[in-house]
Image 1 (cartoon, rainbow, N blue to C red):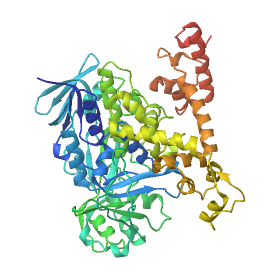
Image 2 (spheres, rainbow, N blue to C red; image 1 turned 60 degrees about the vertical axis):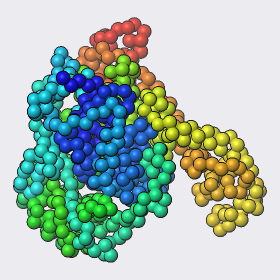
Image 3 (cartoon, rainbow, N blue to C red; image 1 turned 135 degrees about the vertical axis):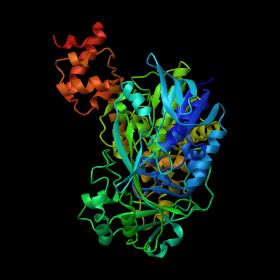
Image 4 (cartoon, one colour; image 1 turned 180 degrees about the horizontal axis):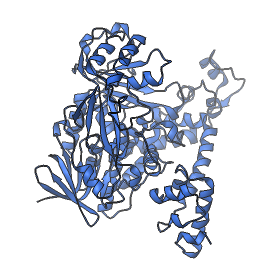
Length: 627
């Protein structure tokens, strides 16, 4: 009889992180996948990172996750986005060699102590007295465990749509997972349907790249992982083209056979990543839409046509895509399709991602209604950490919104009602000036060390950087720069100065960089990352002070814990909507309650009175406030 501490179901990005981190924390762990050769397979676009998503990857890495290392080992086109804007919204992104990314992921897992990879299809989850005990495979084998992490992706009752044709599948080439949704529904879980889509892949040898805009990678690739010193493999370009009115006319010819427009697809798709047919229907005034051609590897023949996601019939896809400039002779290798699947609204989860109905059962990834590799990886990491901590009898690990994008992600998931796939944006983070991609190590590695998940090499690099930052602030910012040397260096770039000024004062000028100022004074050598951190702190000092004040206010509301015994339905002073939402979501703190849609400031005032009364009297029933 096989028995483990932690069982992870699913070998996607969430499953990889959950299994790896649980094993790293000393738990005997097994990852169950339909096909171990497809663990880490990029089902959609061959890229990691992007706006806000890059921050998630850096945070996953700082906490001991794998995604940053895998993309550093397999990336073929690295680009830092938004470099013309402030550091708060800059994000790393990288194209991957798609087949090699999966092989790298598999090699990391194969070398992980305490981790076993099992091929099989999970048909049932064994639950006894409200506690998970293991799973049953399709072959009848029972595998027992103390905790189960379900990362099923798009496989739960998955259906692929191409035109009016349907196929039961979790993704192209893989059968769906049947029976698990029904098991969970019988245990009291609410379920829903979502959909996502993917564009056609085209053969790289039949593209006229000379007719397109070339997008070159950064000259010096910036690694995702804090453990990676540099990336020195050859980088390749991506290309941009556009649809046109002829493209749109052809696509409209397929609307009568569109599974989305004919109602065959019931699930809701991602608003911010619509299909091409949805774009031309919703934005009929636009005569073109951008397409981003992403190569899927050095030797892989497939090119991903980002922006052309579709589930229209094959003949329409083939005819329409050949109207795009540069793609007139293209050959489709794989058709685009939509996939519809079951998910479980995440308000059924605790902040640790443990489910409320079943003890020691955790959900992570698209099963929680999210979209994106990075969101999935972040959830998998946190579910794996918390499963390991709980089994070890340790306190749970929950990140606040003020600490990390991961904290924003999970807080949003468990405290809001979601009607469409959730995607991370920088605008969702109230403290994005403080939660930058470049300082994820400074924010989170101390936490990772207490968890026992961080590499010593990465931690030592972080402590060295932290020390240099403090030294720069203490010993350099107050140093005087010669008027003559400054004016000579910035001649024609910055207004001349008429006297010597401190480094800090000169640095407040937008056009002045700390690295250049350091060349004017005698000082020791500093890490570029330390220099940039100090420069940002000086240039954005006013904004940072305001965010710090807001964070202090935020932390006060987060510290006001709502007694779990509270019976919201009996608090007459609350609005009817607030009573309903609070009863379902059961927020842990006043801060969480304030972020629930439908809970008004007056409802928060009522809760504040209750919390204060409870502290003084120990009264736990909601009726105490109605008298």
